[in-house]
Image 1 (cartoon, rainbow, N blue to C red):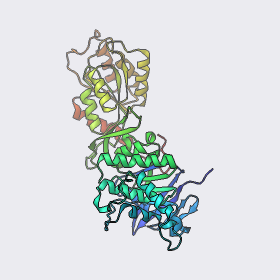
Image 2: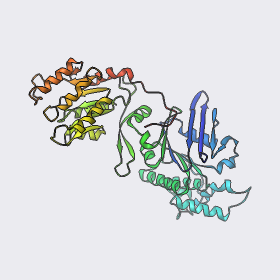
Image 3: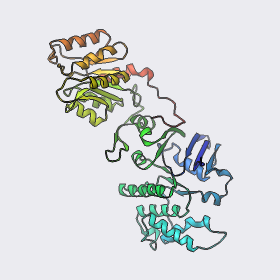
Image 4: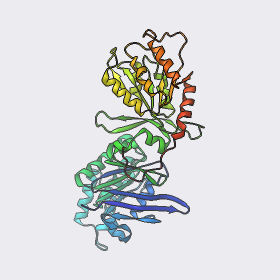
Length: 439
């Protein structure tokens, strides 16, 4: 088995009394494109600088292609790893070709001048960065997006097997972001270059990387392929943001739609991503509940509902897993089995004021076995059963649920307060993982 292109073993870094990295263990294989993600101050830039030898480690070690980095000379390290820093500003208006040739210093013997080989490599790097026709232009005369590509070209001219990028898309518009990361992705595939890129944008990370390593407070919180790492719960726990998870229909890549900051100042607020809470509805009765609970940070499931029902459309828009039946048909065995699996996974069940007829009476029947073992909250209905189109059978089932311990609530505020109360005992988040995410 070939050596890892980059290996960090128990790496810790301190700035005075503050820990910037804590016991980080990461191994990256040759040819992988790995995104480093995490909030500001999570340790992304410190990790990159540790690999480069720009900051000393308190404990642990860094290996580059099987060699202990601390044992390498500056030149030996420069032949193994190249760096694209964030926010570099050029001072002199040197020609782009000369600027890119700075990346060839490690390849020159002693005080040797520029060779034909150096010029060929520089020109190829400019072409790879999309600047092949700008070699004679001054570095200060080009746009910010072009300048970032020039910095990439300089790193490519080092011809190293490992490329580190620290926030390479900072200050770039979306077009230049996609262009730059697309070029990096293509180079990794074509030349088996290992890429580690610190990125703030999780959706870009999921689109262009093979793997995402999430740092939180200096520790590895999650590590795995985008499908396994990206989740609503991750964004809530690490960034304190409520979001909906989607998948790009063209590529299948996951992406997140953030919609609310979860304030830690909210007394008694639900822990980020707590749930799932299963919402039973139909006829539009569950829509306001789904939206409210989603905004409050709860994870949700729903069902069983009929296709084309407005509740179904709301659940789809929010990315809520559900059991769905064809329009106007009685709930079939397959749909009921799916619904029961969602009920089994639920930590609480909410029964909205949905109209009940013969086609969806099974929703109440399937809830009954969970009474007494899963908290059930029922939105109180009008005394006159204008919602019961089953000859009284639905009313009887609701009364049985209440006798078995289901709690009645009057409105959305009371529902949220009761859910926070019944779910609070087990809502403490687990300690950060130091190993690969399991999905």
